[in-house]
Structures are given as structure tokens and as C-alpha cells.
Picture 1: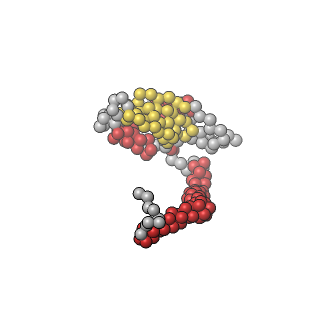
Picture 2 (picture 1 turned 90 degrees about the vertical axis):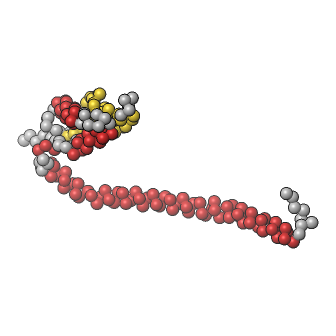
Picture 3 (picture 1 turned 120 degrees about the vertical axis):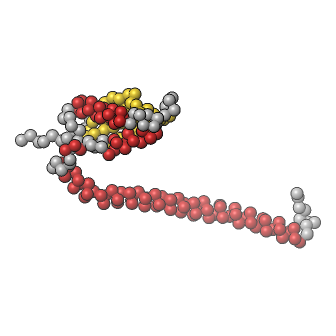
Length: 195
């Protein structure tokens, strides 16, 4: 609808003037204030928030450092329980033992709920480099119902020797159960330094 300003009533003229003034104010705000001042400050505020969270995370990690250093020193002195490490001294034998332990845990939950089995398992080569403890890892695939899978993972986490699930990928298997691909690790007992 076109308003002819020469024939517009005073009310229509006021409404048109108010609309034009509002449009001019909005344009002036975005062109002069928002893009030059508000948007950069909002960006800086977001970055500061991210940095505060990162700082808090690292501060918490630094605060835990003395406790972790005492625990590592205790482990080096042999303060860990005898069963905390894998029983074998050779990495190849330890990998075979780790696969056997995983098989035993899975077999213990094979008949719970929808059942659980381990269709594939193989050792993973490890380069321990300069680490104080040598890691032994295996890759296993589980085909389980949800409850047996949770029980197997719980047993891995809570049992002795200490086992660690380094990576876990879940997918629906063709059997309708859950297929879990994971890498499981344990550590060899550190060798006593030879005099």
C-alpha cells in the first residue's frame, strides 16, 4: 500500500515518520555501534570465558600433581599390590595372558541377558619408550547384550590386575546386540634395577 504524503492525514504522516525513524535507528545501531563495538566485545568475552575454563582445568591438574607424584613414587618403591601388574614378565606372554583374562571375564557373563562373546582378539604392538612402566595392549571385539557388556566393562575396570580400556567404539551388531571394539591395556611389573 502506497501512502501519498501530500494527501496523508496527520496520523498517517506521524506513523510514517516513526517507522522511518525506527528504521534509521536500527540501521545506525548496526552500522555504527554493533559491528564496531558490541560484536568485538562479545567475541572477547567468549574467549575470556573459554580461557577461564581452560585455566581452571589446568589449575586442578597442577593441584593434583603432588598427590600423583607421591603415588608414582610409592609404586616405584613397590608399594603397589602384588596383583596390580600383569603376572608375566615378557610382553608377548603378558599379551596372551591379557587375552586369556579378557576371555575369562567374557565367559563369566556369556549367559547373562542377551549373552556375550568375543569374536576377535589380537595383541597390539607397543613402544614404551622412556616410560617407567611397560604397557601391554590387546584389541578385542565383543558382541554382547547391553547388560552383559556393562558387566564385562565393570569387571575390567574393578578387577586385578589393573586393566585399562584405552578406546571404546560401540555399534549395533547384525545380531541386534551391541558390538564393542576396544583396546585393553595392563602394565608389566617394573624390573628391579640390576647392580
